[in-house]
Length: 150
Length: 118
Figure 1 (spheres, chains in turn cyan, red):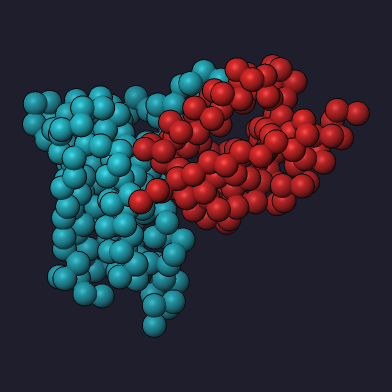
Figure 2 (cartoon, one colour):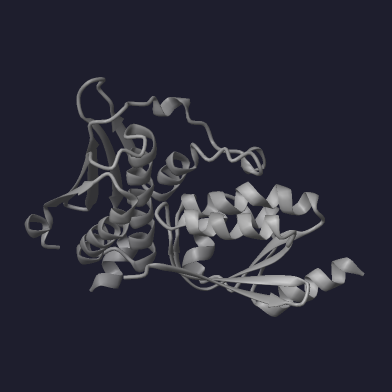
């Protein structure tokens, strides 16, 4: 693991056409860190969901705002910190979605937060009104991944 | 670069929608437009072939959720087919296999439509 070399960050505009670029950026770093393809896919999806939520809810589709995605690999932990300066929200208000409730009602909020929790080992939020919001997504490298890497 | 494509085939009374590429918050509105068009044309027997779908996020899943009720009210259905394991895992994460019929092959889904009609 080239931990030091993997520290990197990227700033994108709050536009959905940048999601592909973010996915490629995070996917490459996760793969280099030693994750299996399945874990890489899960990490990439969680980051996509976090950025999509920021675009939709924090910035409410304003296209000229910034999202910063920082990757901090440390020992066996792969952490992604995502920052925005939009509207904060209380993640504790998001409960597990009931698919039947969502169907037909165009009620789509909450799916991304739920998926992030399922896809990652830890999800943390640091929201400060008037300051930058932060979402931390953490995945640990399992023994299985390390064996596969050798 | 074109990152998402939709191709529609009319197979008698069943519409087959082939998805190709990346279905995310950027491209989901394209799929929404396609479904909207099918609704206005009263086409409710829909098979979505995911063979060339490389990626899906919750924005894409949301489109299927938004239209399935309307489709079923009109005695139709949205059936999903040919998913790669990677794409299936995302559908599975939200419990789609309980509420949607998912087939390995497009033809199986078309046959199922014809069976339910009898």
